Amino acid sequence: MTTSRWEPPAILDVEDYRRAFEIISACHDASSMTEFREGLVAALCRHLAVDNVSFFSGSTFNLVFEDSSPLTEGATARMLPEYQDRWAAHDVFGSPPAVRQLLSSSVASLNELLAQGRLPASAEAYVRHYLRGRWQVGSAAAMRLPLAGGRTALVGVFSHSPTELDAHQVATLRLVGRQLAPVTRRLPIGPEVQAVGRLTGRQREVVKLVADGQSNAAIAEILCIAEDSVKKYISRILQQTGCRSRLELALIARDAAL
Image (cartoon, rainbow, N blue to C red; front, side, top):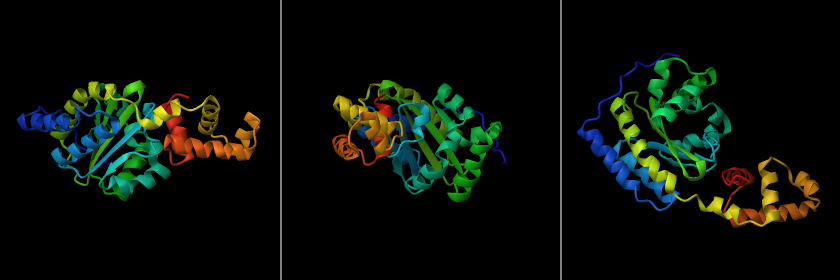
């Protein structure tokens, strides 16, 4: 793969600080994760002048990429089905070089990662075939945010232009990430996770087995109940938690540490 030209870290100027302040102000006082992520995504689009932003979250960094219902804006909504079906496990921002950047400075940019020239083959394929070949993404960056309970969020920013997310934009994102980390750590966990915590003991057993990938028949055998009873349990649990599928319920169960 052709590598990108490395750019030295930008020195923030007055305009960079203004943009960062506007982005932070848009979500700093959010009272819930839903309010926060909607405010942040809208502010990134407005103040960084980008159209394509996504907000994924999970109980661990690795599970971020399995988020079944991320917030998407612009082309990321159209990109999502193929991403979830084929590419989530190969995301370039889940590669070891990206993780090191995200842990050390809260932001990793595609141009920086390509310039290093040390990406795994699967991540290179993700960039070549999915980002660039399929969706004509010219530049991209990801911002990691710590959430309550040890959970993690990953905010993706994508542009068709190879120069739109330049060193100044990336440096602005890093400033935003550092300033928002204390905010995101204090936000309450989502209502779905709280709903799982309010389930009965038997319901929680069923949820754990669903999260383990067990079929209805296997759950019935393990719990010594009828398979029809398992179906009723799962239907009721989906209704109580607001989950739309077994997969979403399984991911919420991991967030709830069942």
